[in-house]
Image (cartoon, rainbow, N blue to C red; front, side):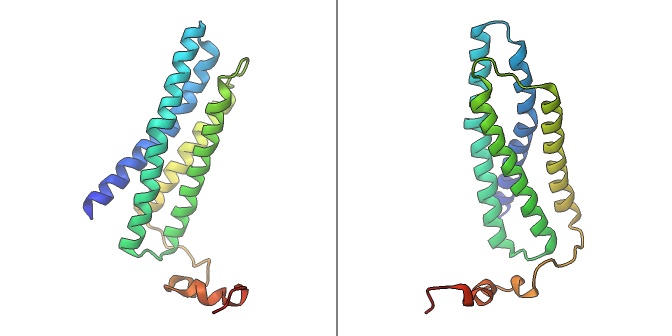
Length: 164
């Protein structure tokens, strides 16, 4: 299973690094001197997002999901990590929307947005690293039954309209 951990770490690193560097490429949109330069920048940004970041995100989330079943993690810190990975996935989706709209005529990416998005992405990636490396003791924010396999079925059995 060491190969799965290495694959997961590599995918997270590529995904995180790409999300951190993309806003820097967006800011360059305002400074391209010609139409050809704009098309080259657009092609590079789309390639980075579609061919590098999105597959890395898919592999990172998929291998992370596989590691959940291997390790059977039911610790509160792991729940926090999943929330932070969800925030990183949200940043990824919003980045895709920027990639679609940025290169339309007249659009630019303001420097204040570059600073804000880069800082937010760095904060999320740093928080993920801190949580994973420190594995802090956190209070249980969910019922103890949620740490037991099959507990969700028992907890929501009354809500199921298709009872057996």
